[in-house]
Length: 447
Image 1 (cartoon, rainbow, N blue to C red):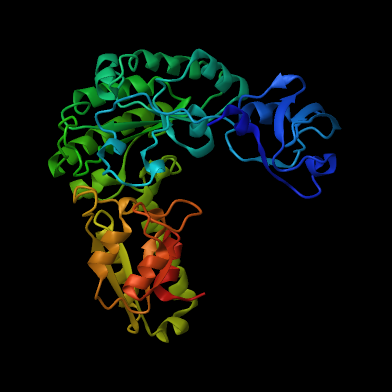
Image 2: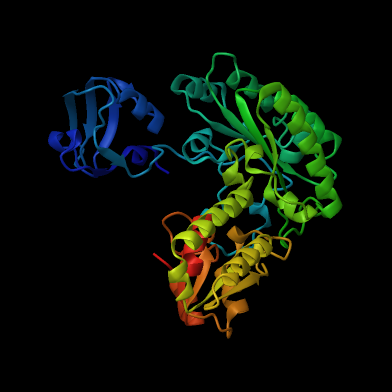
């Protein structure tokens, strides 16, 4: 990306300060108060001042110096073509567990980009390894109070971290956590450990939990997730899937540390992702154990929250709209991944048990595209959904989980669009909201 293009204004809000000044889409922001701007954080920091000298370059090359007096924190009303206003930092590691390295060729280019940018951690919740973060980057995080930052630790053993990340500087990078967690920094962090069988589990996991717990309260939580293994691993580091007994050992270790840390700090801190409980065949922890679902986006507590929301929504609609439920005559289908299929099926059975006119078919979609070891719904493809549902009586509507789609998009990982699924299966497709209340609404079809 051309750096100059990073500061091009993409939109100007009507009746805003920028609109009144004659700033237009296509103009380039050069400086504010004689300060050059690196990225969106520089811009947001400088634009708070009440007096601004703004240097703009118009599309024809003419430069305007604009004098602005405004209220503190009042926005100029401009949006940039590149939301970060800078190039994204790509990952320089060769992680033994990287899922992008396990993807087939021929998919869209954006799916192969490996980001490792602390700014995206703050803006979008991405996890960073710290390996390409300079001292200047740490200074900017502290200066602008970019918090929370999500860190992908994997292990606190420096030598093992170098091996796992394929980067000889990966162990040294852990020292950057010390600066981020200085007593008065005010920076909050969340962590992640991608667990690989026979590599960073067992005693190594225990060491990591012990070491990371010393960063409380700055480090608020750490999730432990099993490595995802696709069928495209030729030539990659030999990793094995976890089995049920492995999952039980991981859960036992994590829960023993939860008790210890909770007694000392009042938080559970270390969390096993939902996949471990599915694999072990154990019930999910109660809601209180998830510390406000702080690691929800990392698959920690998602099923407990879904179940609790569904039960609340179910009880509410049953008590308030029993007459409407008795009149329902409805046949729908739900497609989901293997991991959550048992839970969704149980919810569907519960709904049908109170409504004789309701038929819900729940289909477990096998991930043939990436391989059967990939069981999460978010990695299902349109071709697998179409191929496995073709010719089936899907009723009046087929519901798909929202995590199949990126925000604002209508196509799946393999570029199959929702309209393609509707055409191939001759069915209306609805997108479930992803919460339990939404499932109740989807099932019963009541406004």
